[in-house]
Length: 312
Image 1 (cartoon, one colour):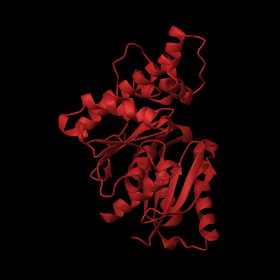
Image 2 (cartoon, rainbow, N blue to C red):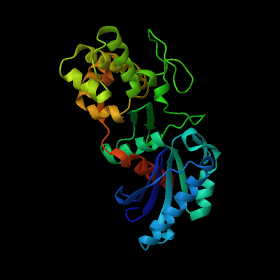
Image 3 (cartoon, rainbow, N blue to C red):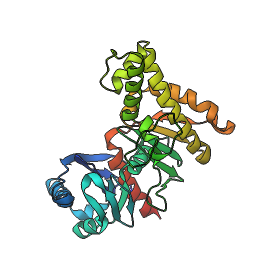
Image 4 (tube, helix red, strand yellow):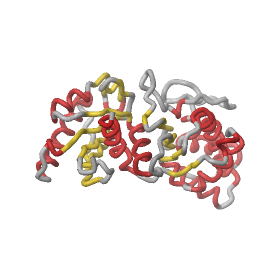
């Protein structure tokens, strides 16, 4: 396994990250191409195949040098198919079959947030960890849940949709999924920005901010409105996460996405908010950390999924 090579692919709406990865998790080479969404996304697969073929030729390798291909996609997956990926134009896409026909290698398909969770578990977590909850706080809220080293995909290919935990709030926000008051509406970067905007309109319409980094900066300088916006966001996040943590008792919770760039300004109050909500046996033992693998997590996690399947 140490000398094996794998191909990892992380398909996004604007770019596709690719990498040659060893069985130890070392990235030998990584590159990316633009996501061509023309022709209902039909060019995407052709571009991936051509890019991989070109890179293999460039490095004087053969396809037989590789033990498998892992692919992360932004949507639910089931039975080797992408059930739906709106920002790619795909619906019920038989991606595994197509890639296998192109390279004659084992292929594993996984949701991109789940892939990132596995990448963090494999490379970022302490060796031997098997149970983690990964949460991305970006434009929306995504997540991946790993139990006994395996991703929870769910009966409807929707496991780990942490961002769509329903909340009880004093207002109504429509989520991108069509439901009302999902966690994503409040705990994402957009959610924090929306909360801050509401408070500014209520208390100080002259206060200027343009992004979530500005909100954390204002709070650090003692601005009470920014502090309240962050505290409100963290409160909602803590209640949602506490339900997951008390149910699963994970070894650690990993926070990624753009909001995690705030570091301890986010994590410290989140730990404080979580503690009184957790079961006594958990609260003093839970490890909560910022994601550490970065943009490579999806490629690495897709490969890790291949490796895990080949161990069966």
